[in-house]
Amino acid sequence: MKSKTLIKNISIVLVIFIALIILFGLIISPPEKREDISFSDLIDRVEKEEIKEITVVGSEIKATTINEEKLATFKEGESSLSESFRNYDVSPDKIKSINLIIETPHDWSWAFLFVIGFLPLMLFVFFFWFLFKQAKGGGGAMQSLDFTKSKARLFGPEERLKEKTTLDDVAGLKESKEELQEIVDFLKSPKKFHNMGARIPKGVLLIGPAGVGKTLLARAIAGEANVPFFHTSGSSFVELFFGTGAARIRDLFATAKKNSPAIIFIDELDAVGRMRGSGIGGGHDEREQTLNQLLVEMDGFEKNANVIVVSATNRPDVLDSALLRPGRFDRMITLDHPDINDREAILKIHCKGKPIAKDVNLREVAERTPGFSGADLSNVINEGAILAARRNRKEVQQTDFLESIEKVLLGPERKSHIFSKKEKEISAYHEVGHALVSTFLQESSPVRKISIISRGSAGGYTIKMPKEEKKIMTRSEFMSEIAVLLGGYCAEKIKYGEITSGSSNDLEKASQLAKKLVKQYGMSSLGPIAFGKKDDLIFLGKDLSEGNNYSEKVAAKIDEEISKVIKKAEREATKILTKNKSLLNKITKVLIEKETIEREEFERLVKNKER
Image 1: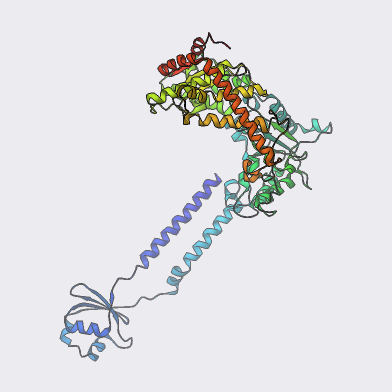
Image 2: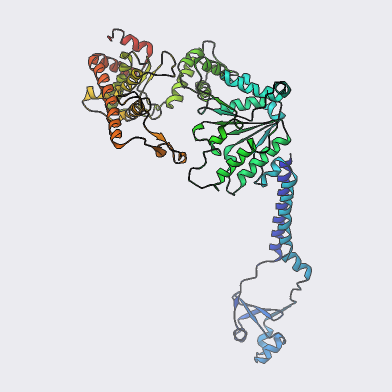
C-alpha cells in the first residue's frame, strides 16, 4: 500500500509540473519570425508603396508588405513615428495608405517575473524534497531510493500462507532435512538446548550442484519456522558505489537483530564470498570489503543473538576459508543428485494436481533418469504434461513422460531436419557401433534405445541404462566407457574406410575421460600420482588458473599415457565390431528402416551374440 501511495504522489507532482510547463509555453509564445531591416530601408519601401501595415510597440516597428512579407526595425526612442517620417521627408500621401497600429509595451511586473523565473526552480526543490521525505519516512518500497539499505525481502505470514512449503514437501534429502529441522526446533524452543549448554549455530551452508533443491530447502525452512525470514542473493550486495555492499550487510543484520530470533537466507553466496588475496583489485576491492563486513557480522566482536544465516552455493571451492570455519558456518550440508527411490518420490510430488493416467509407472521414469536433479525431474513432468496437452489428451500417459525424458536430455525432435540417404546410413552405422560395443563389454551398461531422429544438436543418439547406480568406478569400467564412446568412430572406419565429423563430440568426451584417468585417478603406469594443482587465482577460471606441479618431461609422458588409453580402447571397440560385422549390418538395416529401436527389439536382434 505504501509503494502505491508513493507512486500516486509522484504522479500528481509530475502532472502539475507538466501542466505548468504547458502554461508557461502558452504565456511566453515564441516571437514571430521577421526579417530585420534598417529604418532607411523601411522608408524606401514606404515611398514605393510596398508597405500595407505598420505596428509600433515602443521603439520597435513591425511592418507587413503587400506581399505579406514580415519586416522589423527600430526607430529613435524619443521621437514618434510621424516625426521620424517627417525627418526623412516622407510624403503624407504615402503614409495615409498604410494601416498604422500603436501598441503599448508589455509591463513585466514583479509577480509575473517571479512566476517565470523562480517558480520552476521551487517546483524542482519541492519535488526532490518530497521524494526523499517519502524515502526516509516509509519502509519497504519507500526505502528503495536509499541504495545503502538492504534489498533483503521479509518472508512474512502472508507469504507463508500463499507459498506454504514445508520440509514434508521436499522429497529425499533425509539427512539434510534432519539437520535443518534441528535449526527450526532451536529457534522455536531454544530453552531445551540452552539447558544442555548448547549454543545456537551461527550459519548453515547448503552445498550441491545446480537443481538439487538448495533454494527449495530454504523455502521449506521459511515455511516451518515461525520467525522472521529474510531472503536475498549475494549479487544484491555488489553495486556501483563503493561501500554500498558493506552498508547493506550492516543494515541487513541490524534489521534481523531487531526482529530476532530470525533467519537470513543468502542465495548464491559465491557472488560475494569469493576468496580474498587474489592479487586482483587489492584490499580495497568492493567485493572484498563486503565479504569483510559479512565475516564481522557473522562472528565479530559483537555477538548475534538468535540470528541464523543460511546460505547456498554450487561453488564451495571458491569460497574464502574464513567463511567456512566453525563460528560462522557451523554446519555444511552437502546435497547430491537423488537416487532412484528419491527420484520416484520427487516425481510423485510434481505429479500432484495433474491428471495422470492410471497405468503411469513412475518407477520406470525414475529408472530412466539416472543423474537427474530435482529441477530436471520437475521439467520432465512439466514437459510430459505439455506433450499431452498438445496431443489433446485428457490425461498424461506413460509415453508422454518417456518422450519428455529424451527432450530434457537432448532437446526437441528436429523433424524438419531431413538426412540424405548417405547421411542417414552413416548415422545409423555410428549409433549401432555405440550400441554393439556397449552390449559386448561386460562392464558397460545395457542399451535402452537407439535412434537416428535428430534431437537438439545430435543427429542420432544411443541411450544406455545402468544396471545399478554407482558413485565409484573401476579402471575397467572407465576403459569400457571410452571404448563405447569410440564405437561410432570405429564403426564408420570399418564400414567406409574413413571417418566423418559426426564423431567430434564422442572424441572430445573420450579424451577428457582418458585425461582424468591419467592425471586425477592415478590409473596409468605413471603410478598413484595426481598431476596438476589448482592455483589461488580462481577468478581467472579453472583452466587458466591450473598450474603444473610436474616438469615438461613428465608432461610428455602424461600425453603418451593418454594416447595409450585412447588407442587401447579403440582396439577393443574395433575388435568387437569386426567380429560382429554381419550383426552390425543387420541391425543398421533395421534402424534405417524404423529410425528407432527400443531395448526389447535390440536384445532380440543380438540374442545369439557371443562374448
